Image 1 (spheres, one colour):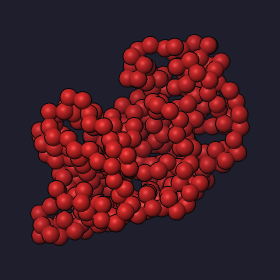
Image 2 (cartoon, rainbow, N blue to C red):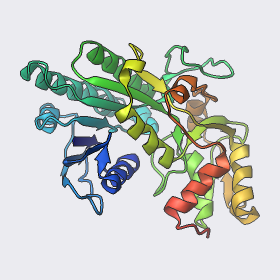
Image 3 (cartoon, rainbow, N blue to C red):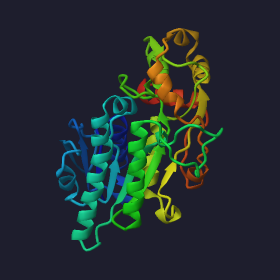
Length: 330
């Protein structure tokens, strides 16, 4: 089993590599090698019993993707992207990284498929987003809801989903796209994602630091933990895609809560002192972007196919404390 993770230096990519190194197998098969690629050189996961190669590369440059798939990996995890806020601020960069790079990767795999006379057909797991949806929304977004993104990031991900479905239909690879809810609580430093505050208002207070809330407490959104996200990716890598039919992209399960309910969950887990570290500072740009996102996802199809997530936002907070804070609260 050969694995390629593109976007391996990011939080999800790093955790995915660590999990695969810990397991030593994927889909019941021993891992022979793993290629880790990102715009900055990823770090190899500790304890890997297989060969790991790490390289810095920009897959939005023509020719890079062809070199990455020349070794014909069995499973390709495509996680590389610039986040929603940055894609909105920098139109050219967003389309180069989130769309052009995806097309180059898919085309590079197609060329390897043709060179092998159809013998090479890897599983491709594409990380999409619920940003592919756009308002106006029903109370709950079902699997049949149409794609009308209201951000450049959402548009780029929606086009990637269509490409994945078409390349899979033509038999060039075996693809599955998973629309991730907002991953919370993200460890590390704040990034440029418009959704970053959802994690900030939990992570920073738990660490004893102040946090800024740029939207009202009535804002509702759907979340899953990083641990759940890794579970989504691994399940997507082993899922029998015959069950998907032509509908290769599906929304992942998560917990739908208001910001106020997030804060209340923080209060229950960490106490009043943690909540007191949150400061309200309205940001019109963030408010506008978030207003175009779905509030509740009915991920019935994904659940029926075996994808699972947490059952409460308190569980999501506890996962962060266990995985990132060694079980301790500041």
